[in-house]
Amino acid sequence: MGLRFSAWNLLLSLLFLCAPVLSENLHDSHSIPSHMNHMDPSTMVFFTLKDLKIGETMPIYFRKRDPSAYPQALPREEADSIPFSLKQLPYLLQFFSFSDDSPLAKAMEGTLNHCEVPPIEGETKICATSLESMLDFVHGTFGLETKFQVLSTKFLTKSTTIFQNYTILQLPQPMFAPKMVACHIMPYPYAIFYCHSQMTENKLFGVSLGGDNGDRVEAVAVCHMDTSHWSRDHASFRVLGIEPGSSHVCHFFQADNIVYIPAPTYHD
Image (cartoon, rainbow, N blue to C red; front, side, top):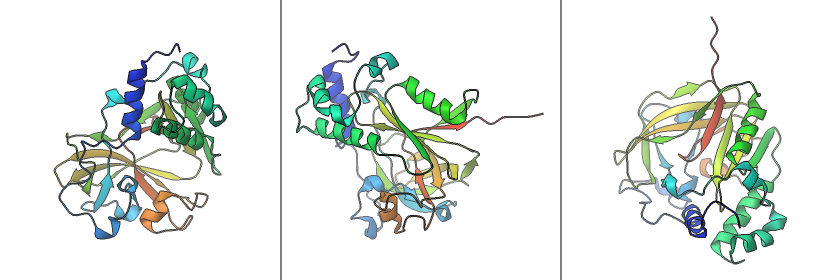
């Protein structure tokens, strides 16, 4: 196969990404609003600007995974030698020795499907198959000479609780970001990042959160101010009870997401 990872590590990585982590607690013993009990906890990351105030409490899902278990990033030359398209899925399943009806095959199919969905109006996107291709996309968005910052949500405490009430502890800090690229890791045998950027207005914030169980999180959050071109099936509309274009939508980034923004420039 010539790939730089073992089949065993590949299998562990995919299982880690595609299956629930059974050792984690879904929520602490503290109460979650009853009207949210029927919702998928992993969708509980959405809110609106009115919620961004000190003392506001909301249920939030933060997945917690061991970074060493993530799929390995391949060099560009190696990644480019492997087909990456839905029509090549039968070949890829044979290439990675996965059966057609396995959960791993379904995860690969889901990722390839997601990556081939056309961008919405005002959006540019890529499924980066290597770190080099991810950085090429960032430079293409910001400009080759533009320096950039890398942001991510950080856990300040260790715990296994992934869904609980969090309270905003300090005044949320706006971050100036005329452009932004967000990259989300996808389930696949090697590291795939779904990266996208929107031309419409976004507002970026740093938010200090305290969990009911004492967890502390320094979270990165974004508010998308124009949702008029989003699919009506987007999870945020179900969670917030709104319609496309009727309101902005904010969400917290998971700790394994990467957010790129242009570095601030200083003038005398």
